[in-house]
Amino acid sequence: MVKLSGITKSEVLVGLLVAVSVGIGVVALVLFDTTGGKGSGLDKDFIYDIGDKVKIDPNLIFYTESSVPIVTGFKKSHAIAIDANGTIYAAGDKAVRLFESSGNSLGEIQLDSNPRCITVSKDGNIYIGMKNHVLVYDANKKHLASWPHLNSDAVLTSIAVLKNDIFVADAGNRIVLRYDTNGKLLSRIGGKDNDRNIPGFVIPSPYFDLAIADDGLLRVVNPGRHRIEAYTFDGDLEFWWGIYSPNIEGFCGCCNPVNFVILEDGSFVTAEKGLVRVKVYDIDGNFTAVVAGPEQLVKSHEAEICQIPANCQAGGFDLAVDNKQQILILDTIKNVIRTFAKTR
Image 1 (spheres, rainbow, N blue to C red):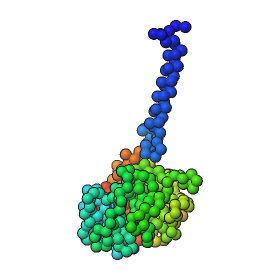
Image 2 (cartoon, helix red, strand yellow):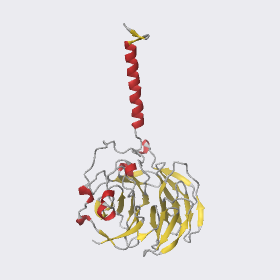
Image 3 (cartoon, rainbow, N blue to C red):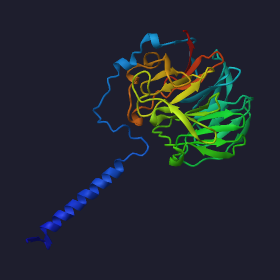
Image 4 (cartoon, one colour):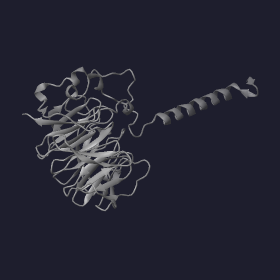
């Protein structure tokens, strides 16, 4: 057997095989994606033909824009809410701005950093989600409380209130937090739990919405799974609805829907980014109508089906519903609030 510098050919061959195996293992580890954040894994040249998805059948559109958009004045807006009196709250930059439905300004709450979500309780208290903590103000815009800061991974994206329970969606930690009105953390909801048949939330980008339905169940978007899930306040997963599809009845891209609201009849209004669409589903999750599609909401080049979150940050519109059941859409591209009324 011939040796090369004291090493046999067979030893060289074994060494090469070991090196290749280790290299493959390292590459596989790097490429493995536990969150869905790297998209679908489709080849970069894979392109959807979305022409027929952008143009929605007019017979499916049941709403029309009913008033002049409200200009928020923000450079970067994040969220809207509306209270029982019809006052509109818009969160963006370092403030929350209040408006009448006509667009007249009712002042603002100035903040030290950027708010990411907001809701108003029936008693008028204003809950503002910052990146990693919650601020509470009263109806007169007086600061009441600052809740404890969460860890550095936290990204708060939605708040819902029912009596003494406050639920906060934390997209960074992929969990729903249940608090009391004093800001005491009571429990965590939605973490992966095989014993309770809870698969966990897949959140590739910072969109993670929730709301409380009249049936007493908490509804939470699981955007990476393209569905809305129903939980008890104790954290039991009861059921879900939603399918992955670029067709009008489904949700597509890396992670949709991004936001939703619940109408008084129990229907859901959902907003999608990428292929920007606002749609209505009945109480059981069956598609029923379109509020507005890409042609009504964005420029043609802004509508796309994005498999990688980094390519699909625009169009994460927020939603609210007023006491006339009109749909308010926060256009985070133009930073305006648009109102759509049902016409049939």
